[in-house]
Picture 1 (tube, helix red, strand yellow):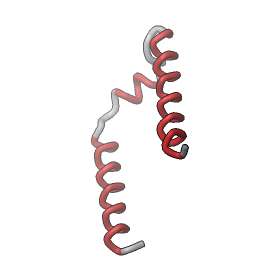
Picture 2 (cartoon, one colour):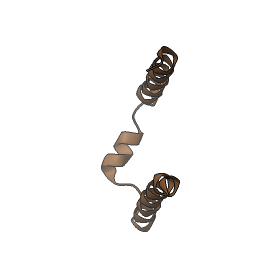
Picture 3 (cartoon, one colour):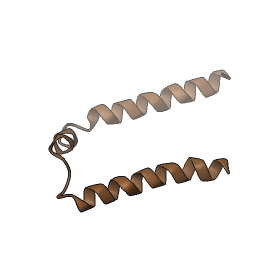
Picture 4 (cartoon, one colour):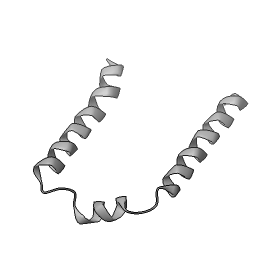
Amino acid sequence: MDLLIALGIPMLVLGLAYLLVNNASGLPVWLERLTNRSGAIWTYGVIIIAVISIVRYASGN
C-alpha cells in the first residue's frame, strides 16, 4: 500500500500537470524564463545533495 501511495501520487500529479500544459498553449511565460536559465546551478545542487547523502550513509547516521 505504501508503494502504491509513494508511486501513485507523484504519477497522478505529473499526469495532471502534463494535461494542463498540453491543453494550454504551451508553457507559461514565467516557466519558460525559468527553463532558459543555466542548468549548472541545478547540476551542482544535485551533486551536493548526492555527496551529503553518501557522507551521511558512510558515517552511520
